[in-house]
Image (cartoon, rainbow, N blue to C red; front, top):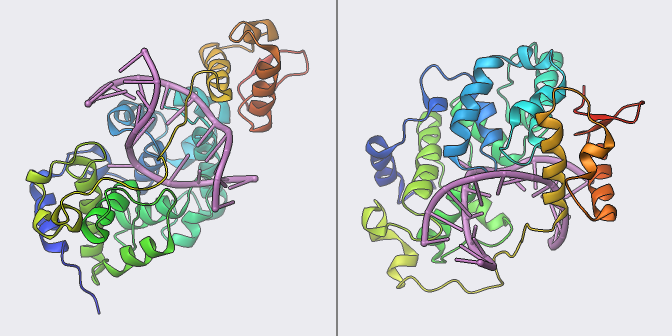
Length: 291
DNA sequence: TAAGCGTGGGT
DNA sequence: TACCCAAGCTT
């Protein structure tokens, strides 16, 4: 039987506290919402906002993007990070044109089949763009449910079946309400139930929060992260791709060699970029963004 | 399943 | 200063 002890309070809170984001406006299209979701994967809202505006101005529909070289998407991506997302978005646009007549599909299964669209993004687009009933489980929701329902400060490192089952059990029966719940609980996690210093005083469900009621016990478990960036292949890849983004024409190898001293790591990073389709090695020995 | 994949701002 | 974290996906 459906029982969500938080939904009424969270929905009411959202009514007066939701941010006005452009992809939430009434004139947002499924395409503009899909673009926002891809951009927001591991990237903060404040950095996505200007990139999304520029992207939507240039490519207001999948067909507009699909007729351009994929390298233009990578260039336009600029410094948002994880540039394979730009490649995925271009490939998704092509697939939407070829398989769906240029219209972003509405079914979860069709969305999931698009490049760069996983379980979260498919559910988010189906919910936000098409008003469907899905469990939308992102990092914000996982944290809210861990605290409010499970009593832990942080969710497990990797998503568990128990989390999915819990999230599904909380989805309101009515589709329109479910879609509202999805965006509302995400927003609560983004604005109030934050990772670092949650604003429990402003939380509409503080009275029912298992973690707070337990006295906010500290997180117990393995170290949550540790990924350093300096000196990694990721940093080298970033520098190599930055050279290509900023050059309107193909560049000689020498222009890439200057970004990293150590040749073994540099070549490994470049080879990986080529393998990923982010860099195109031309016949004359120069390098460019892909076509 | 866990590791790899960018970048920049906050603490 | 060094982390930590941000609407994940892929292999």
